[in-house]
Image 1 (tube, helix red, strand yellow):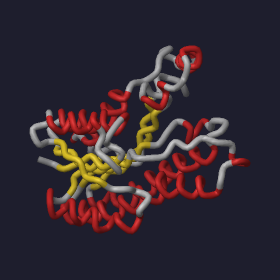
Image 2 (cartoon, rainbow, N blue to C red; image 1 turned 120 degrees about the vertical axis):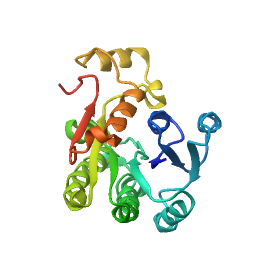
Image 3 (cartoon, rainbow, N blue to C red; image 1 turned 180 degrees about the vertical axis):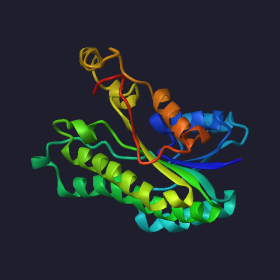
Image 4 (cartoon, rainbow, N blue to C red; image 1 turned 45 degrees about the horizontal axis):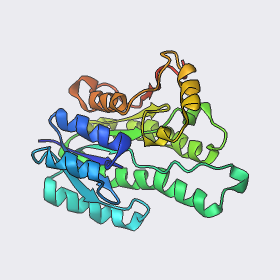
Length: 240
């Protein structure tokens, strides 16, 4: 059974991605700071195909040992989904420098360092798949999300360059850029705002976490063996 590491796998998008990959026959290691009730329930129903591995991605020095520990316990990873990230909002002029630094550390530096150590294992195993979860904000922009948008744009640049670096070793690197998704992050919006956002999309609705899971599923599949350096937009046509 091939191993896939999914960061931020305890809830929302990460948990939806993890569930889909388990359904596809992968062994999924859901990484998060702590195990949620939702993840615990999913693990108990997975017959061993889903497990939880604790890691605070802001602790960059812990990443190398973490990857080594996973390899010893489960074997070399076939896939990595860099999904974990902070969604800190705020006008740049009033955002504290420490918030900007933490946002950049978790959303950019951590996935780059994690990919570095995972890629080494993939190279020795003869191939693999990396999927980075970006956002449509990386290309459209959004008021109050300038620092966040910068981190998600960085992931796109990282995706394209790394795809060229590791392609000859049989490793594909792609990105998925969700729009507004039906998760707890949009649950805080009132009905009027949700209707307004959905109304701007070509399909007149919000995409669901399962839609992102389906895109990741395809990119992990043999059907996507010649897809690398690509960005899949999942936004119900909001940017069409």
